[in-house]
Length: 147
Image (cartoon, rainbow, N blue to C red; front, side, top):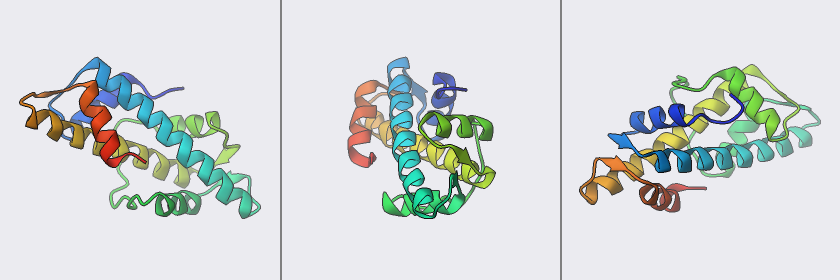
């Protein structure tokens, strides 16, 4: 899992409340998910560096969540993405090492972010009389709740 898979992202969108997801919307969700990963990884690297550590720990991601005004997830259940995949994604965006606890929180936050955008896009599509979310709905949802 070097990138977020379109199929996994579409499943997360459906868990987030979308009835159907167009391919265009799924691709936009992948792009936004990768942008979110890039932002939180780079911020976590800064916090770990300030603590004179190479390894990103859970506290670094908690601090990032506070910094970007996102709530700490209550339920740390992982739905579609793997912990190992999360570590690979974090390393792809510059992390040298990531603890297992941090990678679990990392993946849960990414999944929740995608589901939040999907929930918003689903309600936008419903207001327009559609069951399928399309790219335009995702763009508008990102404008509402994106970071």
